[in-house]
Image (tube, rainbow, N blue to C red; front, side):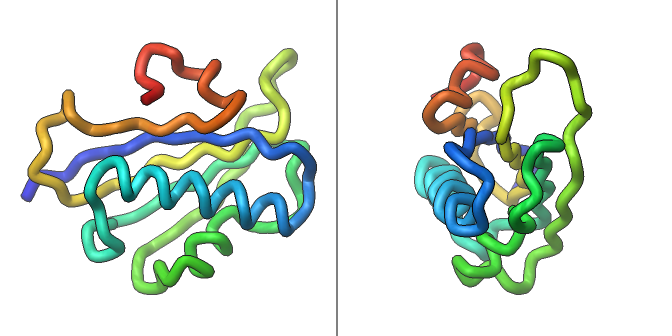
Amino acid sequence: MTVRAVRGAVQLRQDTAEEMDQQVSALLTAIMERNGLSADDLISVWFTATPDLHSDFPAAAARGLGIVDVPLICAQELDIAGAMPRVVRILAHVESDKPKADIAHVYLGAAAALRKDIAQ
């Protein structure tokens, strides 16, 4: 197995714990499904949130999906003028036999505009 990194992002419609849970869960699920991954394939996951998100930790959604024995960490994105608001990003380190070029990076909804070059 090789270590690969998978990127993803989603924009929340509003800053609520329910919206955070729903959107981050959808993003994690899409990342895992599109890359044929299970929780056992996860090495670690970094979550970042824009400074305007305060309702909950993005990692709580992963725990709600049953990802309980994987190191998770949350951090705040840089506060850049003009940046897309209410965005949660994920950088997951995984074990996969897929070549780097076959890794599916997932940008849901409006967040697809962030990385048109790699969004699937």
